[in-house]
Image (tube, rainbow, N blue to C red; front, top):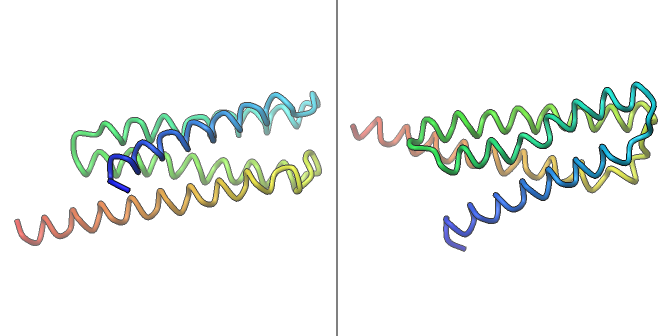
Length: 128
């Protein structure tokens, strides 16, 4: 798969992730604590794709890394809020296991992308 095809795939994947987060929020109980935690995961989970879109259009490796690191922070935060939904008994683990797995998979992908570009930046600096 070409680099451009991989980028397009990750754009679609982060958008699908955001849509899953939106559907999760819509299905949450109307209890105050569920809505409060849900609002946090909604904000963090839907911003991952926006960060990736910004990274995708970045003008430099440094800008790409910065935007991807922002997306990684949102993924880490999403994971935290999703875990709270399970551990508080708001949503059974069985209903969130696939979304938790996707969150962890995206974290791994973002970390790999950031590391690859940072390594490339380091090589350019050494040659420079």
